[in-house]
Image 1 (tube, rainbow, N blue to C red):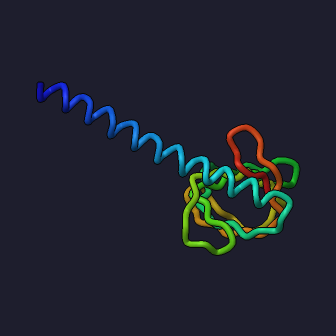
Image 2 (cartoon, rainbow, N blue to C red):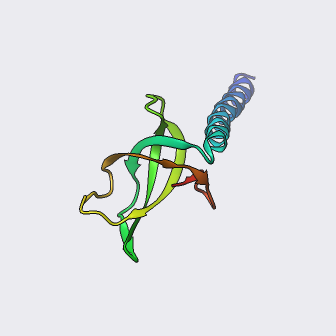
Length: 111
């Protein structure tokens, strides 16, 4: 009988943790939608090696915070900007300002 209650407790705990995780994901998506077509400041970590394509640098930022907030969001932003002399790599922390556009695929925003 004890093992039955342990299984039920474990399943209930799993459902609760899953719901909390999904809730934070949905909150991040909703926040990103509110920022579309606005000029925002984003800070985050470069998630991949930046690529230079036709005089532009393309990369992804994750662990995002918006407008100088200290709260990190479970979001990814796809960034395309003019190629510059600034050299940065994967895992660098960057802060960018620009007009947020609707994301595509798994990206919440496009910058």
